[in-house]
Length: 180
Image 1 (cartoon, helix red, strand yellow):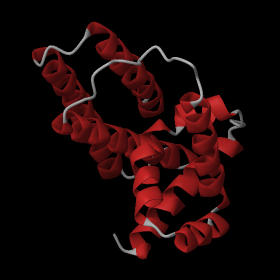
Image 2: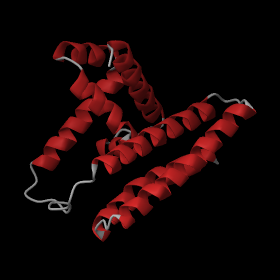
Image 3: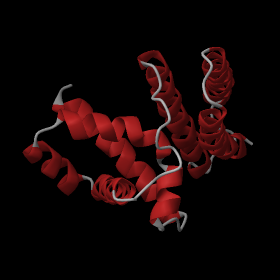
């Protein structure tokens, strides 16, 4: 992935972090919850850039840096726990990992786009833009249901399904609220 793409992803994360700051969201747990959809983008930057490139992105985009730092600290704290409720659970298949990643990415796009729409202060935003978002939201809900059905058909453990429902349920509620 070229540096231009990493800059685009970092800028997107930075912009959403600025939105959260403007809304008074500052606690790490709240930021993690609200930024969950950006985990795949952050991962792509983390594994795809050199140390120098990562430093440059962090210097250019302070919100990106703060998000990366919060996620790194949370990951370290999680790793250092003696045990976790999900220890011993099987990992998703590659297909399900890819589906989950796409769902998270689309959720982040929806949340960010709806937030931008609200912040524009234009109550009569382009109807075509609103329609595109509504269509993407309906498709996301359908894809989410397909993902869950596929997990059930594969015989995924009920506890794993609970985690999926909880995580994606929080995202769906926030998007639904923004979609109005």
